[in-house]
Length: 239
Image (cartoon, rainbow, N blue to C red):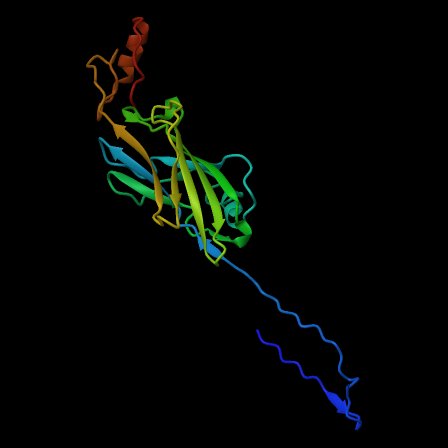
C-alpha cells in the first residue's frame, strides 16, 4: 500500500515560513487480512466379499464421534438428525460382485479458524444380532479409531494429518496396532479401511436333525418337530 501526504506552508515575507494552520494531523490505517483453506479428500470404507457375490444392501457401516469433538459446521451437519452419518450407511446397490466402496467426509472444507482442531471417530461394520445373521457368512468385527488434525501452514495453505489405528480385529479381539499417519501435504491420496466378509456353504443332514442348512437346502418343518419330540437337539430349520 502507498500513502501520499500534502503539507502546505506560507511564506510570511521575512525569510521564514509558517505551516498552514489548515494542515491537520491525519491517521493512516492499513488493514491486512489472512485466509487459508483446505478440502478434505475423504475416508474410503471398503467392503470385500468372498465365497459368493455381494448382494444389494447386505452390509452397512457406522461412523460415530469418539468423545466431544470441536465445533465445525460441515461435520456437525453430518451427524445431526437427518445427516448423512446420523445412522449406519448401507453399501447399497452400486457395487461389484466382490465388493464396494463408500467415501465419507469427502469435500469437507477447513479454514484457518480450524487450525489445531482434532476430530476423532470410530469406524466399524454393523454386526447383526445373532438370530439375524445369515448362515455361512463371516462378519468382520474390526474397529478403527480415526483422528483428523487440521494444520495451518501459515502461508495461505493448510493440510490435514489423519491417524488411523485398528483397535479391534476381525474376530472381535482387542489389539494394539501401531497407528498409521496420513499427511496430506506429503501424501494426498485418500486413505481406506477394509472390512472383509466371506461365505462358506454349510454341511447338510438328510434327516433334518443334527445337521445345518446348506446353500439351497431347506429342512422340512415336520422333521424339525420330530427331532424335538425324540429328545434330540436339532438345528434351526431353514425357511
